[in-house]
Every structure is written in structure tokens, then in C-alpha cells.
Length: 245
Length: 245
DNA sequence: AATAACTGTGTCCACCGGACACTATTTTGC
DNA sequence: GCAAAATAGTGTCCGGTGGACACAGTTATT
Image: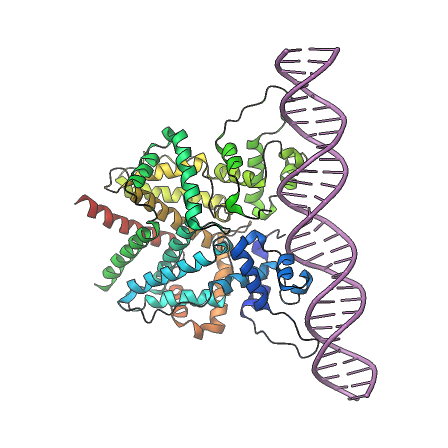
């Protein structure tokens, strides 16, 4: 498919994501639109996982042949980029959140968490160097803006947003399954296989076995998101108070 | 390929990763081995990205036909699982690291960072619910063991390791490209496209534009790993001192 | 020696992304 | 009004993918 993804020309993605969407004057009226195609693809990915998204499938769902899609989209890679930015959607408005940067960033984290819950395939799609779309940049904007007023410089704000977003992504990856099953099911399955493996080979992993046993006893499971987020925000708070004194 | 990954029976992966590897008594001697196959696949992925790893390609590199591989591996998904655990490799020995949990966890973070640098395709391969392999569990073990002596309970230790690992993964994803180019190239490319996009649409993203300009001015780039790791460890330290008093 | 188990090969299949030629449709300039 | 130009959707073809299956060759057991 792609022999060297680093040398892909990003022009196709850029024009699809950022370029103007103007109808040519001559020729028959298009029966489809990039938006309809993207939404159909997202629907498939949401319901049946990213592997089910093929050109044939999308076109079939829309009632067209697969080659007709190539009138709207230069290729599948570009379509996926558009799927990503469309699925991420509009960034949240954090102006209504009071109480300064910490509450704003926390709210932002929960919003992006919901996005990942709604579109689990996003987690596997946003790896590697990519061209950012308008919505994706909008999310970064709102998060960086939440750190206005703190004494952090630009690089630190970017890094801080990176850490928070990364944590949510990471937790979502652990929690969510790619296909249609609920996260309870998936977590339960992995947890049970993990405990089964540890029951057999536990002697090789004493600390891990003890930790999991303790976690199960205290029923302190699924705190990963809040735990890590609190740690990260605590660490940021330390830096911010440090800067402001 | 896979219509619903959540319902995959993990038995194939489990037996391949954890099961005994015993030669049957009768029949010709196998000319290959799962290890050789996995290593050949890893070599391809390291050099040309994960998309270049196909059964035909692996078999061709080994001088066999692709169908011969299926005598050793039930399918490609299982082979990838084995690739992952093999590429992660032996966990680091942190007993030699002095100075308590913080230095140990920091050392652990840099070790896993190096693994992700060596095998960038890992970042795209370890998404979703998966069965852990022996080595992967070994890394978790060594990280959890590093938190021995802190007052944290089992669940907190697991969550802490999750956060640190997630951060490294996140930074590596931003830094590394899937194929052969160096990370400098990739970062440079994305950075330049980002600035070009912001130069055109910067009015929609004022805070982001300002932050990036400030970061460029202070030349405080590529501090993401250390920045976030310091914040996370600071936050953990707060919790630990809280627990011990 | 016969048999059973196993290894590697060749053939076949459905599906994938995509190139290309073709017809049908619509707008423009005359 | 009419021809030319540009576009939209279709049908056909191609190389590559993962994998099922039958088959011949090899080895240890009986």
C-alpha cells in the first residue's frame, strides 16, 4: 500500500481537510459529498470497527459503486484523515467553566474522553505523524487557551496539553475495544485472561500479582483516568505555583 | 479480515505466546521456527514500516513460501502478537538503580522509550484490548516492583505505571514516524506544515499560534518527554508523601 | 515394511485499494 | 439552438493481501 509513509505527499490530505470545497461549474451535479462519505465511513467504523471500512463497503452503504468515491476523495488515506477530523468534531467551549485552568483542563479531558468513547477506532487511527485537521487544531486551541494566565510559556503549555491528552488517550486505549462490544465486556475479558495467566505464571511476576490482588481486594479498579489526571494536574499545579512566585 | 475483534478467540494468541514449544515426535524436522519468523517480521517492520509486513514478504525473506508459515503460526494476528512481545524484549533490571522509586521509575521510562525508538511500529500495534505476553508482563512487573516501599496500594501502583508508560508512548507517537526516516525529519515536517497551516488560518487559533511562536522563540522544543515525566513524577511524589505521613 | 504424523508447496478464493477507459450529464461559448 | 468542454458515475482490470485445502515428501513409531 504505502512503501514509505514518511515521504507521502501531504498535499492531498491538506487540500481535503483545509481546502475550499467549491463545486465546478460544468458537468453533472454530484450526487454525493465528501461529508456524506465521511459520515458513512464513520458510521461503519463506529459499528463494526475500522477493519470494516472499505471503499466497497462505504459505497455500498451509500448505494454507489466504490469508484465513484474517488471523485470526491483522492484515496483512502485522505478519507481516513477526514474521518478523524470529522469524528473529533467541534472543540468544547470552556469559557463557561469557572475556577481557572485546572477545572478547564479537567473539563477538556472529560470531553475528549467522551469523543474517544464514541469513536473507539480513533485511538488506532491517530498514530504516527499526521496532518492536523481544523477540528483537531480547535481542540488544541481550547486546551492551550485554558492555560492562559498561568505563568507557563508557550512550550510548556503545549507540553502540558500533550500530557493530558496523552493520558486520556492511553486510558481509553486500555478501556475500549475496537469493535462493537461495550467497554465493560472488554475490560472484563482482558482482566480475566490476565488473572488466569498470573494464576499460572504468577511466580515470575510477584509484585504484579500482589498489586492486582490488592487492587481486586480494595475494589479500586477503573480509577485509572481520575488517578492519572489528578497526578498530572497536581504536577502542573506545582510548576505553576513555582512560576508565579 | 476480522469482522468483530472483540469476539476473537484469544486461545491462539495465548498458546503461541505462553504455551510450550515442543516438537512433535513424528514427521520431518521443521526448517523454520516461530522465533525466526518473528525476527524476520520484526526486521521488516523496523526497516520499512508495519505495512510492509506480509506473509509473502516474510516467507520470501526466509526463502520459503508463505503457506509454510502457517505451520508455525495460526494466523497473522497471532504472529503480530508474538512480534510485539519479542520486540519489547526482556524487561530492564532496576535493582542496580539506587535512590528509591523515583529514579527507578525514571530509568524504566527511558528504557521503554528506547524500545519504542528501536521499533516504532510498536506504537501502532499495541492499541486495543490485547493479550499480554511474557515480556510485556515482565516490564509491568519491574515497574510495579519499583514502587515497592511507597505507601501506595496495588491499584495505585498499577495506575501509576499506566500513566508513566502512557506518557512515554504518547511522546514517542508524536516524535517517531512509522517508516524509516529519522525522527528529526518527521518532526521537522509536521512542525513546518503546522506552522504553515497556522500562518494561513492563525486567526482561528490565537492561543495556539501564540504558544507555538513563544515555544519557537524560546527554542524550548522537544522537551515533551522530560516535561511530562517530571510533572507526573511530581504528582506521584505528592501522593506518596501524603500516604506516608 | 507399513503406517501415522508432520512439513513444505501449489492452487484457489474473496477481498482490498486503485488505474483507466467509457458513457451520461450539465454548463459554457458561439 | 448547438457544439464543445468539463464533470459524474460505472465497468473492467490489475497486483497484492490473508487464508483454506489438497497434495507429495519426510520422519519416527509399530
